[in-house]
Amino acid sequence: MSVDKRFIDTNILLYLLSEDQDKAERAEEVLSLGGVVSVQVLNEFASTSLRKLKMTCPEVREIIDVIRELCTVVPVTLDTHSLGLDIVERYRFSFYDALIIASALENGCSLLFTEDLQHGQHIDKKLGIHNPFFSRS
Image (cartoon, rainbow, N blue to C red; front, side, top):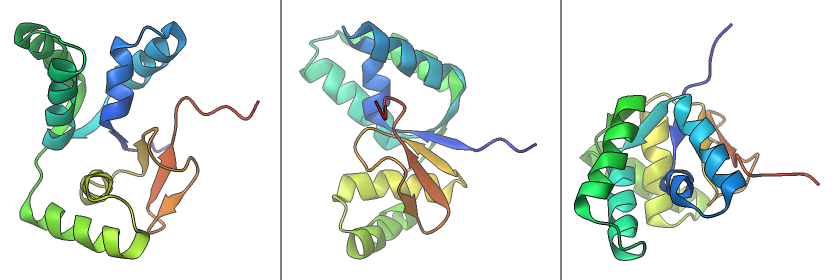
């Protein structure tokens, strides 16, 4: 039985810090299973945590250390940048969302955990979009 390789977007990780207990717990479940994140995800997480959540650098580093222990961290390369532009042209996503998708595709992920894109959508018949907070109710 194969296990889908999962890419985790920044917005899911930020829910680790949420006051919404259900979403914080669900984000923790997603992270505990591991996955792939890009340096872009770590940068966005740090920026939002410092700027919007007013966390200190040591606090942010502590959380990022946990993320790095549980996930494979991949770089954003010139190839990622080029693929991101291709995805913007084809799918009309924002450039930064396209970079996330490009990173997931380049690293052989079959699932992208995000709240920013349409749940159930498929990119290039290779990458499924999954919102872990999605409910049909």
